[in-house]
Length: 532
Image 1 (tube, rainbow, N blue to C red):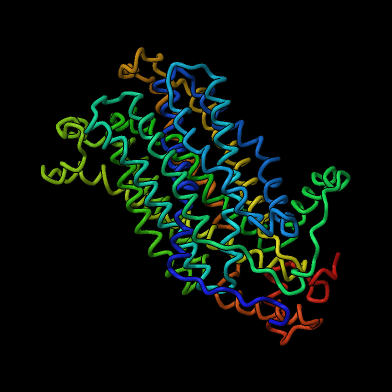
Image 2 (image 1 turned 90 degrees about the horizontal axis):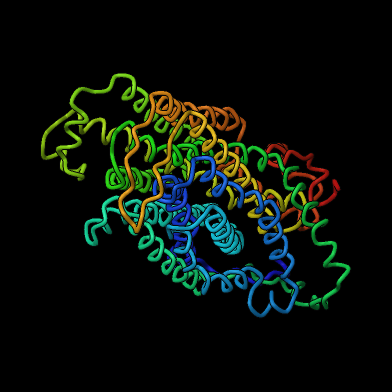
């Protein structure tokens, strides 16, 4: 393209180097969503409402920090820092020495405010990394298949880190003892904190930002201007809301939230469901989650090919079918209470995989079929939205004539965090309102006391686990029917963007014009900033 520096060719090193960042992106969330609510209510003496508030309130604060970091990183391009260090990488580098603070969240013996403040601090570090990192794949290539490879590498790392997050408690208990001890979670968080710093360093070393065009190289960095700094919030929220003018992005957010909020509800309720309905302790929860995340990893590998061949919508619908099937099986388990399940589970001695040696078909079915179905659905639900994200800045460029990867990452993360905050707070409130009783705070790292829950509390947990996710997935499923982004339509869009950049005011063919108008939601004559 005239006036632009030739783009570098991405290789597997770049795909996996960038993708390794989801050890922090998804790894932290796997620990937080999988264990933190359970940790707070089981080992810290906090109520379900207090645990929900700790997990939810910091995400509301990110209504400011998410778009702000996205906006600032976008606008650092023509500053000294942006040119010498990188407008994205400066944020990544700042987080490296601070990420081990993750372990501070998993220390027992503190009050509500300690856990709230330590979680707010880590969530801020997480956001400082996540939003600039998410833009890099979209900056390194415009090729549909290359973008899918980046998304695939990311999701494989994400599911691998989730497997680690689920299996580490088992590994720590088996090697260091302390069954149902809070020390298990502190050791796990310390290990992850060190890994987080390492993977951010790998990302910094194996990625690059969008090359400067010849015209951009001539732009002189502007000196600091106080009046412009004061306008940052105004400009930020203007850009924030402008992203919602893109039709494909609005549809994408709906699909994204349908898949992810369903998992937020499941993640919060599932450990308590296992403890109260399946009657399993930390070791059983850890092993079931490990099996689920292994299935998620397999699901992502399959979904990569489905998305490349047919687009994201088909993969999304298949995933909803698998996850809904798993939830209905858990409902069936609760309603029929399979004979001999509790006795068979106790006989396993804490290792669910020994069920295969016993040959108890009923026990094997109820332990593994629902959780594997859940994993097959969840893996694809995780992959689809972030595979689509890499193409959204291309659609936006057709409308605005600008590259705004940062603001899109900021908006996605903002919407995700606010929705997740609401889901967790409401979930915690529902569990508490149903009569769930948290065990008293253990003394000196002793095992948590087992509390017998009332039938009403158990009814509430089961209903929440099953009905909540299914409602959210139906919402996403309805919207997905009108979402038409795939490899073919994306290729048409990119071609038309090149023509718009060259000064075109009419589409090459009526068919290509319809494709671009369907994705953007704008008339062709108003594209490239002409419709402002």
